[in-house]
Length: 183
Image 1: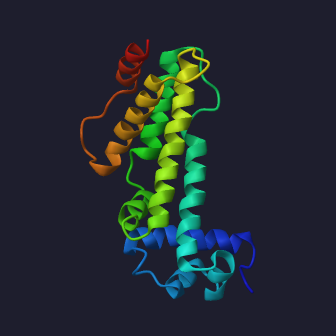
Image 2: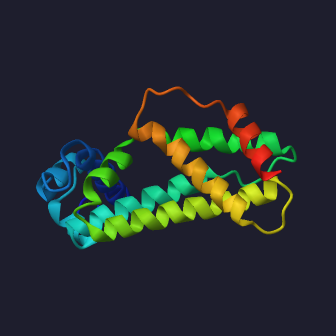
């Protein structure tokens, strides 16, 4: 079968991301996906089992990649620098309307597993930010204030993807406000 390896699988995921975002899951046939990916239709089922399996794999894999890019691995010694870098990353990855945002918003209502996965992703992001904020403010263990601040950062940075065009929050202002509250 042509495209039997990971290159074919990657092309299927890329085509699914584009077509599900543009046309919706229900209005995208596996034949259309296969044609867009340049693979035989059976390869979709070989790699993902079902069309819904493809949707869930797409969400799982893209979100894992995004989560790895969201929170810096190293925490700068300067807390303000740590929070400004975190804010820049959050607004870059969560604050823009991406094909994945459109897919999750559109399909969560109809796919309970997708809705559950989106919740897991949200919780994972919040947990990673909570730990990062604790480290940035010199705490060995996160407190409820760190968790609250993390939830607020996720919500505020994501707002741009839902309601774009509002006034931007500067990274410095976010850092100052947040660190004053965590101080």
